[in-house]
Length: 395
Image (cartoon, rainbow, N blue to C red; front, top):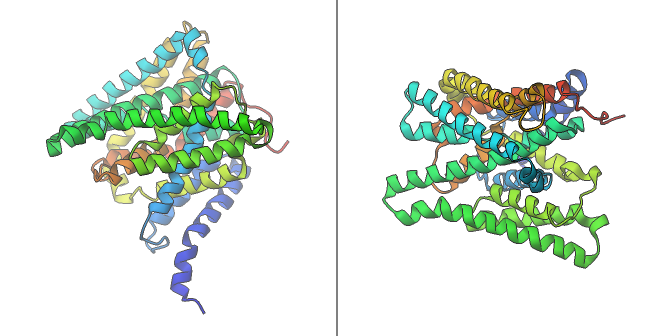
């Protein structure tokens, strides 16, 4: 007969995922709350319970699962990015660059004014640039939304992620150089990682569509083929020490421009994507400790307000020149509120390198928790107010 303690340990994570799924479905049905908000709340509650509900131990398999889930999300986001649109409407790119630059400057100034160390302030500012593609894509898919605000929101999210990764990796490179004095370590943790990640994404984005064409199975197996491609890419990127997040985003963008079409029914990669999304949001929020949240709550609230104000203001001011109304520009900025999962996985990737930044950035932990719960709601309302909600899922 198996030991009950060991059995409970083995069942802890599957039960946590199942609980999150059940509560997410019920909350979405009764209140309209986005499912991912509930997934994150369940993970945080279980991890910070007075009782040890989740086992401690090797988190490598769970981290690989989280990166795979996020890799699928980033691939899908990249697949929906039309680079030709950015070329024909350069004001959209200008909007993203201006938003990123002003958010960086504003968050940096506020963090320094609150007494943060200069390096911590710069790291906070670089991470605050990002918009969580997991939250944005899941909400747009749940609503089946389409229209100007939806498309701009997806494109600006991808651009923000790219800029955030660039800024963050450069900051980590500077941190590594200041800590070790080794120029090679600084380059390998920043520039070489970025270049290697993009190169991997380019290779997979070219090779996988070519293989699918050779197998003549685009209509039947494209979704499965791309899912396996993301799995291989994420695993290889982890093994080589490059960024699986940037590699997956590049993979999706390049594959999109090889004219391979995913069936609309396979958004979120079907049941596999749904399962991995639950695991992603539950696991990632277990890394956020309650003491960190309390310690950084005050500054976190200010940073959230400043970041949101800048995004909405820039979106509104540049709306008319980029081809939309002021109202839709403001709603696009409002929809860019989510931040959490992308940031946590970036920080966890640096922890593997021996740089534990999450413990030093208490305001970021508080921002993560608050935005993990509230931000999908804000994005949902922005898309509904823009009139871009599609046909209900269960119609």
